[in-house]
Image 1 (cartoon, one colour):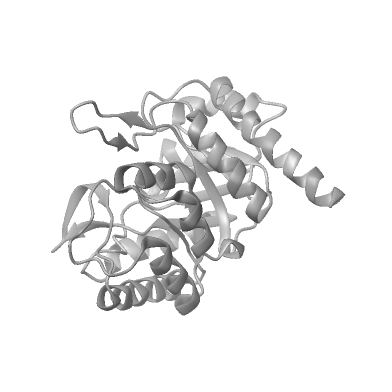
Image 2 (tube, rainbow, N blue to C red; image 1 turned 90 degrees about the horizontal axis):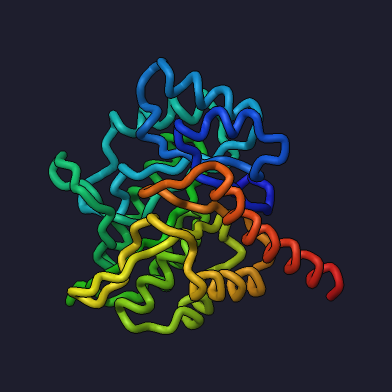
Amino acid sequence: MSALPARTGVGFKPFHLDDALADRSPPAFVEVHAENYFGAGGPPHRQLEAVAAKLPLSIHGVGLSLGGPDRPDATHLAKLRRLLDRYRPASFSEHLAWSALDGEFLADLLPPLRTREHLQRICEHVEETQQALGRPLLIENPSSYVEFAANTLDEAELLAELHHRTGCGLLLDVNNLYVSSINLGFPADRWLDAIPLQAVGEIHLAGHAHDAGTGLLIDDHGSSVAHSVWSLYVDVIDRCGPRPTLIEWDTETPDWHTLKHEASLADAILAHAGRERRRA
């Protein structure tokens, strides 16, 4: 499901290029957003080729809208296939979200409607995408701020069904889980009880913000990982064992060495869990 090492990587940004290439003890892998590399060439690809020659690569999609009402866009799928065939990344992931309607792209990754009927539609979208790309996907749990009144399925139940029906893997975003659990008022541990942890091929960690006006937590990827999210991450790793883990920091992105420090904190947790499992 993922050929990444069970250690910690970081999200790569172009201004990190020189530091990444010069680093003699780099993070375990880098991840990039697929849509930033849909062009045929130029500086973006020269940079990515240089980094991918040194480090394992994970590619993360943000535009397929697998949780929306419309089928995946054929042109978008074709561009993704070319990108994946070109770089052969160790992992490819997308979101359980809808971000397009009637051909118009939205400005956010919104959580999907959770009903039996819509679950079937999501399964069809995932199966179509996996066939078009020639590989299984890792599907990421969304961050949520409101519930649809029509929802009849729990998010964890939907993810479990999606995995069993399509064979897709899961990308467990621990920050998204924490944000959603606080905003919607459900226990994160029960959510973890309900998903197939053996299907988790990658984990994401990120920072979040608190909106004073609404009282909501906002998944903004704009700060270091919160203590509460680290605590939940420890629980996840205790349950499923070490997994490839990414530090996401997409707004107010810091320098390479700050990202590496954040990654070292996750690596310490992964190493401890590995020692405890070997001892057990």
